[in-house]
Amino acid sequence: MYEYISGKITGLTPANAVIEAGSIGYFIHISLNTYSAINGKQSVILYLHQVVREDAHLLYGFADQAERELFRLLISVNGIGSSTALMMLSSLTPDEIKRAILEENVNLLKSIKGIGAKTAQRVIIDLKDKIGKQPVSDQILMTGADNTIRDEALSALVMLGFARKSVEKELDKILKTNPGITVEQMIKAALKSL
Image (cartoon, rainbow, N blue to C red; front, side):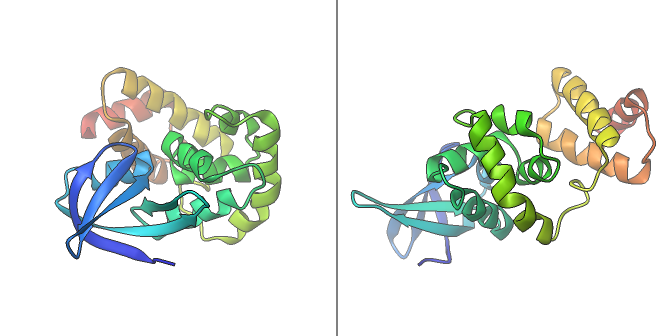
């Protein structure tokens, strides 16, 4: 089993990367989150998960170990293969997936292409205890009201043309310092710093 690959990026799309290491180019499947993290870099370290099938040896790469660990948890669920797990990690951030599982948010998981109601429920049942034992980021620990306010502010700012990733980071900072903030106050504060 491979742990990681370190090398030069010679090809990059939102779905895969070609990393040259030791004069060999490795074709690696990646999530959209990983693509966002490595886009624009010359060289990179990707944490790997190898899948050996009868017809192929596939490498899946992740920008950090936490995303790889979540991928491994997802593929441990009956009915979720590597492609579906990668689709989940491309549709939502790892923290959003963890939060959806912890809060038993079936609708959010169902919004991912290829995930139906039964599969979403199975993911929640199988992984809720495992994810509950993992160290969680502050973002996951927000209350339901904070999530609603954050989501409303996020969609408003994205519609205004701001990049989703930078808006999410800024809103999380604002929520940490001002827990009881309203949607309007949050949008105003974000507009000042974006």
